[in-house]
Amino acid sequence: MEGTKPVNKKLAAALSGGAVLVLALTGCTDAGADDKNEALDAWVKQVCEGVRPQTQKIAAANAAIQKVTSDNSSPDEVQKTDSQAFQDMADAYAAISAAVSKAGAPKVDEGQKKQQDAVKELDTLGTSYASLKQQVDKLDTKDQAKFADGLNGIAAELKKLSKTGNDALKALEEGEVGRAMARQPSCRSAAASASASAAPSSPAAD
Image 1 (cartoon, one colour):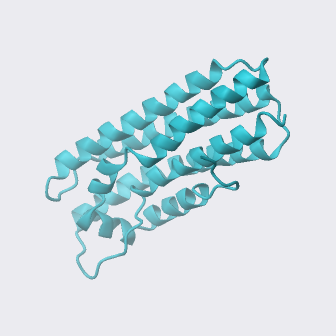
Image 2 (cartoon, one colour; image 1 turned 135 degrees about the vertical axis):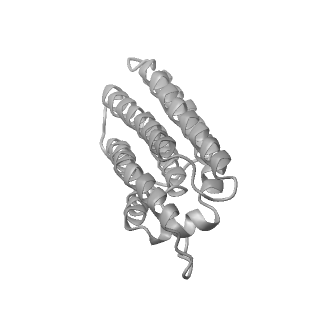
Image 3 (cartoon, rainbow, N blue to C red; image 1 turned 45 degrees about the vertical axis):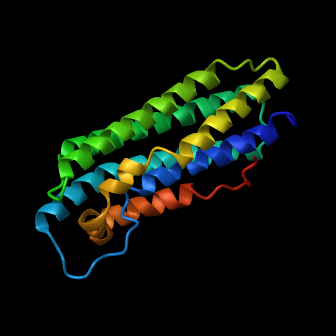
């Protein structure tokens, strides 16, 4: 469907930007020297082990979106794929939030505040993707022009979402936490999954 494909490519590019948010919790920080902290290392290990399967889920959601853009897919197929991808993203961020919440506050300066802010931010992200799922579910697949317009609006929201909302996550991984994440193998493997999903196969359109 030529009228739908260009818009869905924009959607895919915007969605792939959302993977960048996960990087804030997956150890993308240079390892420090010899400042190991066993309690903090244990906290980081617990968080990253909870995050890793969710980054894989996000990567799979991105891959599904990318695939549907490369096919000559019908609006019904696009809607079904995008809807499931948004649901998976919502579930993944909710699970990451639960992992950070369950781990408790890291023993660093303002650790409790940073943890609580990150959980709140992750919950907001999950809610945002759930809302996008509801929006795509309501699109009229029988009218290609209306469907394309609807996707265009969703793509714009996704682009905005991918550029905002990760300040608390960045704050959580600053300093000692970031260095501990860089030392943790499970954080590095989670980062690898997120990095793979962050590379769009088609250029973003404004």
